[in-house]
Image (cartoon, rainbow, N blue to C red):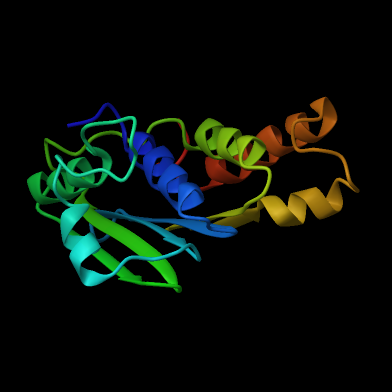
Amino acid sequence: MVEDLCFHIVDLVQNAAVAGARRIVVRLRQSAADDTLELSVSDDGRGMDAETVAKVQDPFYTTKGFKRVGLGIPLLKDTARYCHGDFRIDSEPGRGTTIGARLIRSHIDCPPLGDLGSTVVSLMVTLTEVDLVLVCETDDGSFSVSSAEVRTEAGGLALSHPEVLRFLREYVAENLARLKGLAD
């Protein structure tokens, strides 16, 4: 098990970026009524064939030459299973990949979400060549933000520029705070 679900978000987003994705969409849907949290990361990267999809679910398989194991996807799959949820990978070469998990929030093994706002802002600032989109839905409403839209609004300033970074942090934090359970 991992400390929080943001660990999985970082891992999946980094995997998508390494796979050549130019657009990555992180979706979180949390429902108190259904007692579920659904997480998915979709990208427009290289994608995988069926054989590779099976292999990436094995902790002893990795495409990264500097590592001997690839624990991210197997850990997410196990987390979903332990929390009486489900896990899926949909991928096609040349079309990208979607990895998703649904967890029962009240299950004793369900890890906390973690600091979603800081996680997403850090990824947006770091992945300068990627449009990272966050879409959140709860019983209280929804919120989305796109790094490409923020870059456009910033008028050419980098997301790491102090004024842009301050705006982005505050904007994400305020909107997540409106959605109960998605902000610490």
